[in-house]
Image 1 (tube, one colour):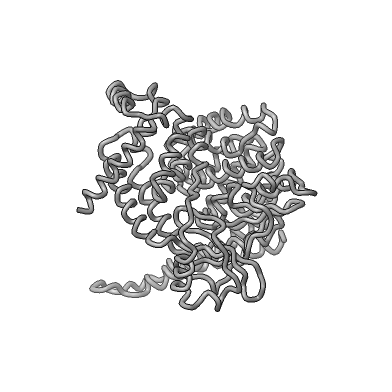
Image 2: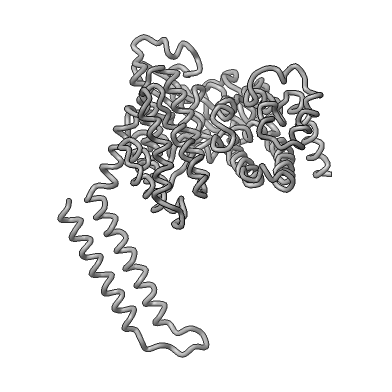
Length: 502
């Protein structure tokens, strides 16, 4: 019965997409083989008035909004794949909104009291009507007992069951596409669906969002570029999240950019630098920095909210991002190529010189254009497209990074149409390069590697001295001891080098 219900939901969703010409839109006819093209044209017989409004991405976004939270989340993930669908299509999808009518305040109060296990009066001095409602949750303005203004987010009643039902239908769709549509396999539909559903499951536990909000608040505090509200931990449960109220005016409100004394250029600079500082310096970044999640105060103060989507970068990915941006800024394409090979993103059997040549094809057109037309996000998108020719497999966190960068650029240029994204980024990238690639940093890295090698050799020596089962014990301990001694010497030299260079 579950499979039949999922199939029925797929049929209903397919009908909505066909009516809007969003299932096999007319825009892709030129790239379809003869058979699929004929089928797509036959389906358009059933299209309605919605099929004539907007581009393919805009029509699909409207359909996904209609289909609910799982479909919206799926569309948001499709928007990260500019390397497959193209920049304009993904830009249209990235504008997906999930604003819905709020559910009754009485239900919200009951959900909060049930989640926190005590009456609202024990936590809040006042509790107001909803100020925002999305597909998963809604928010209410509150006053804390100590007089501070706050906001409490509460999940919709029954949302977990709906996500489970719609998720099963989406999983069935991914399995069908993966099995029967070879052209779609590059998108890895089964893996994409699994990622979407996993993300939704995480978003349905607001304790995790609270932890992410607190982690990002600490990271943001290291620089003056952006801030985040403080978590009110006594108001946090699986279905409830309470934060201090964000100060300022939401950037989605046109009045936000008309505040007296507002420094538009400084505000746009702060947005770009905040994102890059989070990603490079801390390896964690707010991955949903659209206008609705940003609040503005004069002269150039930004506050971020909604921490449901957080991106993470390991040390290797952070180094990759910083060095490729720096390499493009310096127009050092052999160095950028070497970074890709050293990081293992491109296989060693590929031609380095040819790869550097391909990188030049990406970079040189950029430097022939004015600063206001330079897009760092689109540079990365083109880079990912070209590297696919060299069998480079992108890690998911890099795709999310590129998607967020495109969003940040778009918002920065809404704030300041003449904004120079590269000039804004340069101080943060230069700071990272100076800190992580200086002689002192290299010496410290060598020392860490040496001490790690010593520890590994010590463990190896201990294991070799333990007799395996049913095998006579070996008396030869000279080799591990020599190796251990060599490791100690290397570590000592590295430590001395660190001290001398400091």
